[in-house]
Image (cartoon, rainbow, N blue to C red; front, side, top):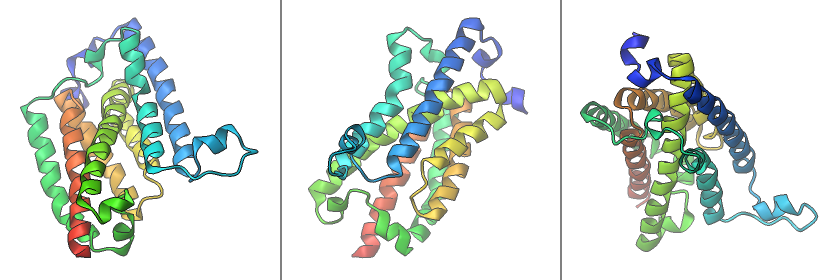
Length: 235
């Protein structure tokens, strides 16, 4: 079963690609650890750089900026150093991938409607507080957060999934899903648990489609739908 799912490049990867994998894996692990530490506390980078200064709480914009820049590091390294982008699920996807992503989204709809009735989800979403009260703020949030999710999916389902799949097959996809779930800690507990399952599903789609893009679209739609369901229930 494992060989049936492998993409061709996974079977013919050479020594240079293996070195790239090792270097990028080390970078990805560093990114996950750094973001876990940053996201689990409320303070700005200013407070990190100057511990003697009075603590300053981070803004929503700083949170997005720090996360996006960190998540983009593997792609920046690949592009600047001339890495083989084709081996990291960075294509546009195929018909199977888009159909699978659509099926995943449809399966999520009843779960999203159920979750939107829970107090913990209503207190969490939309993450950008002004988006709860004004349409322009909601549009701003959805646009910026969609780019943030693009960075997430590129990191987890393009780079990290590609490396882990080549080295460990389905066990590797489970490991990237575990890292994905780790960075959801702090969200409502059903979402933390569900993010592991979602990471497995979207990782499988990325491998089969040789692209992270269908999974990104699914993830972005799920996020926006949760915001809409919470706002509908609130009104």
